[in-house]
Image 1: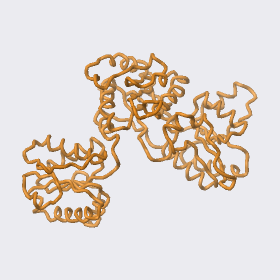
Image 2: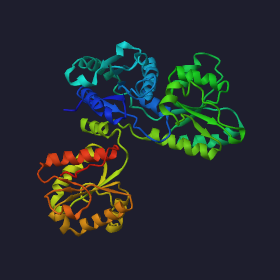
Image 3: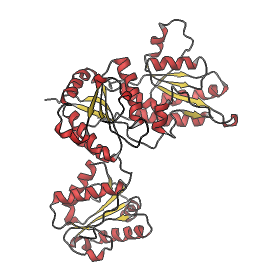
Image 4: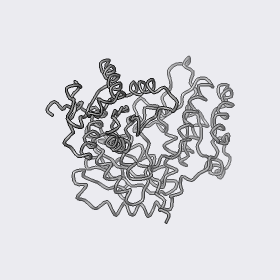
Length: 453
């Protein structure tokens, strides 16, 4: 029997660690009704509003979980979620009549989410005792199921709407070449419409439009048309630094909410020479070209949720052969919660044919925390002793933290770093403690203190 296709859903949520449990509660509720969530992972890279719009157009619906932030002036929640909701209301609801549903924590100003038919209030302290969410989730599934193929699209045409200036005449060949490289057909947009019927015929078939939004007629008028028809735009501005500071980005491109949400990130591709333009355009297109990252099952989704609020970093899991059964379970748990780690058996990224010692040292140097599972067998292993010696050197240089776990109560005096004696714990308890400690380490909590164990 073929499993029912999951409903492709854009999921807007908080990235803060303290909101994980709330996000997980709703993720489980939606998973039970056949939804498949796609997210825009938090990134330090350049903001791409065009990518957000394209992701939403290829979704069957929008789901938002809005948590209270008492430290956020005026919004009392994430400004970026407010921005995403407004974008979804325009891109999904206004054009395609696809459904939206938001769960808003009590205390958040309601005017950010004005449609009461798609808005439900929750109290995080009473989530497990309230069953009023089942009906709206079920109704959303019924409405959105018909749009489950929204993401099944071929690569199409991209509109090019730029002024006829020497700078753009020089850049156009490279722009077209870059777009063609990613499979797009390039179509220059005729901005001088003589008949209203031309507008949908010319604009609606486009995947997106590369447009200079430097406040020039008639491109300014065209941008308003694209905005009204919910056609994604990749916004660019040509600016020569010799002409002075950059102009302010128009409010319709980066309004108050987006400015509060992203601070230093500017949703515009600024450029001065054609090579720079092509390189930055290619970076954007590489992001568009990635397959839709929809979580395939509950474990994948929960792993993502549990990773939010955590700094990037790598774990080196060091064990001897006789303890590999525990290593396997620890590695499986780390994978499920999206930790990056190395283990010589269960997560070995060293290429075949490489010099083992050299590559092992590279793996250690690239790690932030070294986790030895110490037993009698650990000390009998020459490789384990080498790993520990290298880790201690890196620790002495301030480049690595060592957090040991003692499996049989032996040799604690041989490792000066404070660790945990887990000899009396069950395997499940051992795995849970290590996972909890790693999460605490990468979320900026105090390094585990086991001085009393």
